[in-house]
Length: 211
Image 1: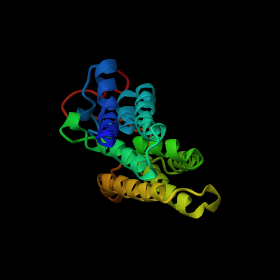
Image 2: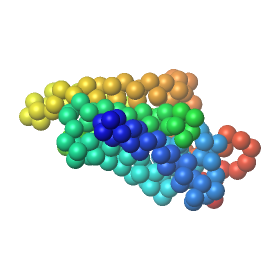
Image 3: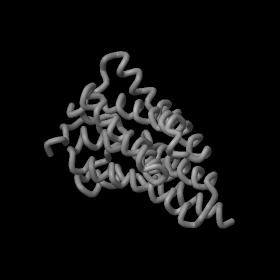
């Protein structure tokens, strides 16, 4: 029962829709009605600007970090720590508070990796920054950074990463790629928004970026 309660808490922690909350509190808007309709930091940035986006990114990352930190603090096994991390990401992606809709899970997954292997998380974040700077596509940076994590965990022998962590990284990377299928289609069609590009609301109305 104790383990079930802890894992349920990890899911609920991940399910908190900070993108929606920040949009409502700071701008009085439903972020789901703008741009891609996603609640993640990328859509918040394109719609509301860098300040709200950084706040959402930090909060979404914290969800993953605190989920695995909670499990480790309670001295659960590596497998339960991994389950807690995956449930936090699943909570963000399929939030019970949003009728099981949600974001891509990139920031929350980053928080999980920070909690498990900070050095690898730092490398993945650096790789993301370089790719986004070169391509100007956040989605490309997110997918390649996600794939880099299990590769680093498997190939970096000196880290001695536990097997459950490697499995988690593989599952998380696969889930992030699947959640980016719409982005892949837009990339193929040449319609994927680039970093810094403003977006229009899904419904009728003006762009909020400068509002």
